[in-house]
Image 1 (cartoon, rainbow, N blue to C red):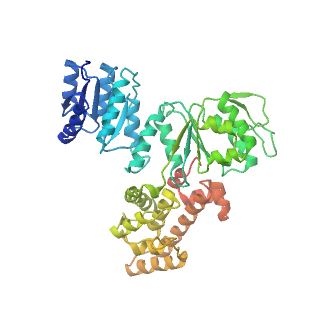
Image 2: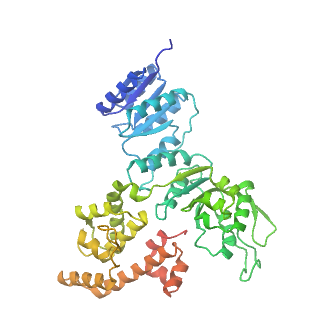
Image 3: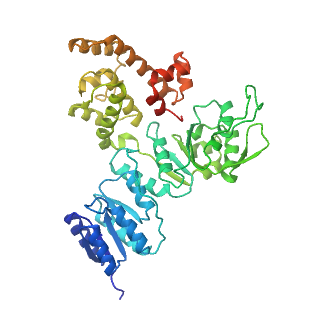
Length: 472
């Protein structure tokens, strides 16, 4: 009878060690428990295990540093990393460091035992060591089970040179996911270029993607490189790919298959090394059936499909998202720090958010711009919200002049100075931010919609805001 597999469980929490250790012993494994990475390294010197399971956050050496040491000294030992702090940075760092898998706390014991079995069966897989720095700010926010599953998937996909198709409703954060895949990939030192194919007129989209030579069409006075050339060595994110015209789909298919193309009006064959990540809110399989999307292009793009959860399916993330967006908006408009009262947070969580995270972010910008107190109450939401979540029927959109009147009354009551100048500044910012959202972040289109010049819009927004919308 074969000897039971030896498994190391490393965690500074005795309860976790005990519960996980007992579950693994009941499954027939031999388990040794360690309360620190240093103690586990001592055990590794004496007798390497068949599998090591480690927490990330521990006093002294953390789990990622322990992972690096194990991969260096015992590359045949699979490592499972576990943590209660699941985010893109930690999961991507774990997979870059060669972890077999990432286990989110709290975990199901049966699932943990099943994962241990898979890791033992796959013993000896090669390591993939790399730097394990985390970005200073979170890219994606949320600790719901749906988001934790998303983080683990991103961590795995980031290292694979595969095309990814991101599907999700409008406002779910598809570009943020694409940026996370790029930032944690071997291409992270290369450029990340984003293009919303639905925001570019069909007659200009070909030139945007592939560039053009001088004289290729009226107004083309000089050679211009396209987005594929700009993304060479990095990642090209194509948003709303379902809106791409069929003729361009054919050209895109060749680039994906051959890695080469001609500029518009050109004869020089351009070769590029680009990872393409596409996104859509549409059902591409249905578009294929309707003859509006090429089946072969879908197969090229859809090597891995990543579905983003709508905000209504992760309501537990709303408070953290709302606090983040409100703090960000208050700092940008120069106001004081604000917080949501419990009743307001409860109302936010009860809302269905048809516009998803983007709708929540826009609401927080309006609250930061028009609210005067330090706390956001439920009545404040009633004044500014475009719909009521208290009944199935949506009330009329409040007149913006009523909100302005309330804001002015509060300011006058509190003796606030320079109300007229502040109101004009807020009006400018609200109009410009709304126009940018409406134009998909395209500053020229936003300026034209408002009857302004692009330079005027850029000056009024300021450098921080224009950077926020750059690359759209």
